[in-house]
View 1: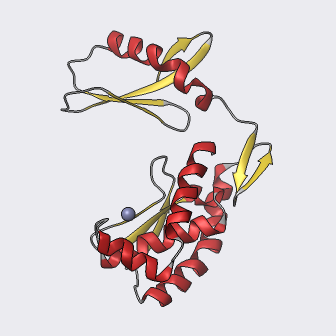
View 2 (view 1 turned 180 degrees about the vertical axis):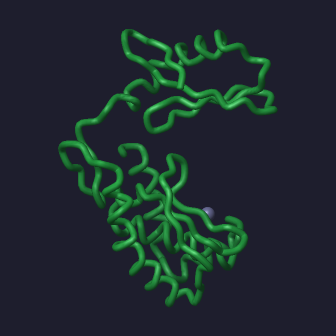
Length: 185
Ligand SMILES: [Zn+2]
């Protein structure tokens, strides 16, 4: 991990060298990830991060609160607690929607992910983000129903959304709330 300093604050960053034209900056949980080709020098990358720093520096600061199933709680949490508790909450939800929708995942696994809540592989194996334990139950339900629906429809076509709506008529509302939640989390 490399470090660049902005107004006394250390900004850790990682560079992923890829064969791409542009340079992309992503703010991860506690570092910045840069994707670009070998054409960009380390000096250029540093100055790029510094230019953008005022925008994202807030989000890299350690927070004095955490989210737990939708509740905002003062203090810190060991992220392994999310990992331990999520399966106990999510498996009954998976079972409930799996029965309703008549769709059975080939496998369910968990990982920490900073960019997505869940995914469905082409072999119908579902992966859920341990950080789902930060969200209110209704939003965990949405993510579960969404990924299960991908067993039937692998894309986000209108057929996919119509299918999901059959089992979760208020999915649009939940999807909107999920986006809002992402911003505050
Ligand atoms: Zn999807």
